[in-house]
Amino acid sequence: MKIKKILILFLLISSFFLGLENVKSKESDEEIFKAEVLRVLEEKQISRPSEKEVTQQNLELLLLEGDKKGERVNFYGIGDIDVVINNYYQTGDKVFVMRLVDEEGGANYYVTDYVRSNGLWYLVITFTIILLLIGGIKGFKALLSLVFSFLVILKVLIPLILQGYNPILVSILVVFLILFLIVYLTEGWKKSSHISVLSIALSLLITGILAFLFTYLTRLTGTAQGEIIYLIESIDVEINFRGLLLSAIIIGALGVINDMAIGQVAAVEQIKSANPNLDNKQVFKSGLKIGRSHLGAITNTLFLAYVGASLPLILLFSLGQEPFLSFSQIINNEEVTTEIVRTLVGVMGVFLVMPISTLLSTWFLNNNNK
Image (cartoon, rainbow, N blue to C red; front, side):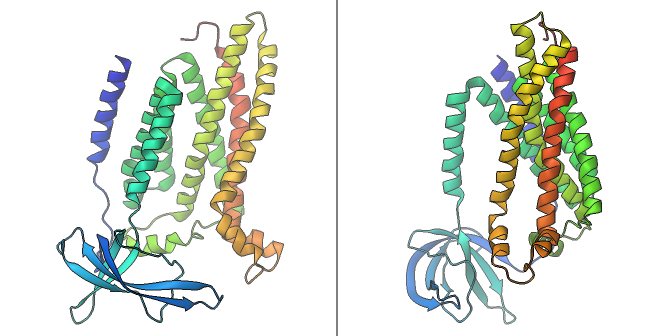
């Protein structure tokens, strides 16, 4: 019966979010379609300045969608222009094709990348099966909360920011909506869940203040990432990019702060249940010991996650070329400073939620916390 209610709730929320309008981008003469590689017309090996050989190809393509669906076109990839990304295509591959119309009205077609959706669907199905087999009903609830979070970000956060609303205010709204969804859907409506929500909310508030403070002190603009240029060129509204950076820090910290808070509340609950004779001071100390062990693992997890996401950037710095000739130049680069602030502020938020959730659960939890 509970699962049926959850599914009904999921369908209602999904239909609401999917009905929201998306913001349209600036008009463009470019059109992109899916296509299938029918055959490779010609191949040529060329050498880059780095002496690495790459393959250029001329392809015959079958358009799979759009007003030219079913039409055969050619892509001429052999030429003097070299590109950073070099994909090797074979017959039967599904690709994205961009159609550009020249001044004389002629159409030129360019293969931009693979269509990767099939592989992603296999990944999602595998992920879902493993989550449900191992997690059971808890895993099912976690999956629903993940879907809800994705829908909230995609259908609420993104459209509102693209319409010009303040990213910080919008993110606060979205973060608390996601927070309620995650905690109450996975943990249920009970006192321990209320304590977890309060602990996470207080920690996120302090994390937001710290993010604002250190973003200001380090003079971060939020425009260091390369994709910002494309964003500016693609939309007509003005976006507060520093606010967008603060929003990213807060949203990025939510997941790990949520994990720590729920874990600490559950730990205190178990300590009190196992030994009801312990006073609050003893329970608090025991909870802190558990939390400190958890903190070490989470800190390393956050650090390694950010390093993994920034690995190409780190490799670039290791080359010792302009403008990254010294340690001072590296850490003062805005992209690097942004990752440092993002990582350390997120870790501070995790450290803060541990004693907060331990203290609140010690005060308010008892052996009957439903």
